[in-house]
Image 1 (tube, rainbow, N blue to C red):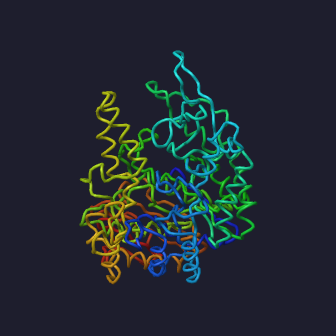
Image 2: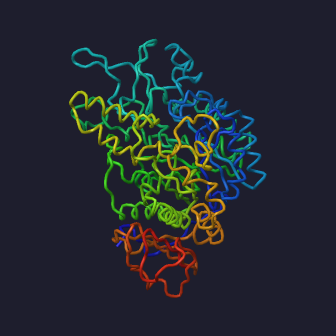
Image 3: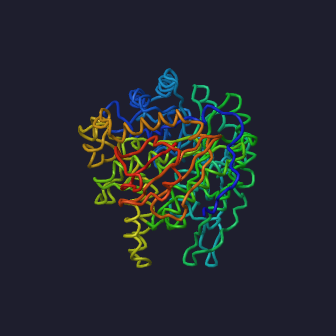
Length: 584
């Protein structure tokens, strides 16, 4: 029996906000479409493809960071919130995108990246200019500590997300500054009221005034730090730096800050959509504190557990590929599907984004024989999920991970490369001679780079992404997997996505708002679940293997009809490889 089984199931109460029934399409600007041949995707390129997005059947375009940036972390290091990276275009181009979407009844949300800025931002430049700067406490500056031998050490023992300490020494003012991510991404001090007000003006109101409809809120639960910066518990006796996520997630003032941002920056603009990236918050009760409508903080959040399937159990082991069982996925999906039942909260449904490998490669099969059918099976799982649905660019055509034979030189991501370089140093020193190969093996499946390969539009050079030299290599198989090839093929992955997104809208009360219940929880080959609302019920049946499987829940289909499946013909009692069916 499922560990989260609930006898009495009720659906969320509260108003039916526009964003609840929306399907959101995430655009990663660098890799979507290059309109001017410079090798980088751009916003005019997104505008050009708005009719394509409309034809797919999505309601909201989420534009990943397009702000001015030195691009150490692909735009998550913002140097000016009120400007656009020149390679991507201009503020006017964003306004043109908003207009193009609004004229078609679609919405636009941006990425809000305000836990940290770039070290090139004027605020940080002023902050680091002098200990007496008016903006000194807009960031976190601390004096060093010293070991018994008198060696200078960081103020606390925290390990950051990109490997290495969260503290970097600044020679000019002889203090350390805090950065949870890269040293080029100093953390903003949200405890300072003036900092918060500047953030609201520059990063939020500026864009809402341009007509955007909301934000995906990056690292949303990391704004409030324990500002005395106590040391993290020592779990690695060989290292000064230690895992320390608990030192900055869900800090003491986080809900105060988010309620203030809601009241001051979101509410005056109406029903602004916000979706927070919520890390390290396993207890649904704590998540509800963010997404309950009565809390007035966020519309919904991403629970990152599904993206962590196959990753190691700790930050240090993130890219150590780890075997997983289907019960792991079932428990994660069920947990975040059911936690809002009987509440005024809301949830999200996704299995791809810019920070994870492709779902077909991770959860299905990217072999030529099964990649299309498994992509369709995963589509069926996603469109029947409760909550706001998110699709990542290329997911709708079944894009897959980069070829395993690609060397590390093809990988661009600062995080993955940080882990690999650290492993190289450990191998060279003899500290751990196996880690480099383990990390490389993990990157082949889990790297953030896989989702950042250029969008595959057609079979011309570089997948039709650019007429120039792309900033990142296009997939070797783009001539086999691309939009043009699939657009007029009724049996393609793209056509299937269009069909099932239409079915999701037709049955939105059941699929978007329905209660969720897992069946046959211990089955390691098939994932079956009920969706129910009022007197209506759907049964979703998914074979996660490349073998025939018995349909163990056939008795549950009595009185139901097959609504959709990913095979043209199916056998009542047997599921074909990666077969998916929805009965209603």
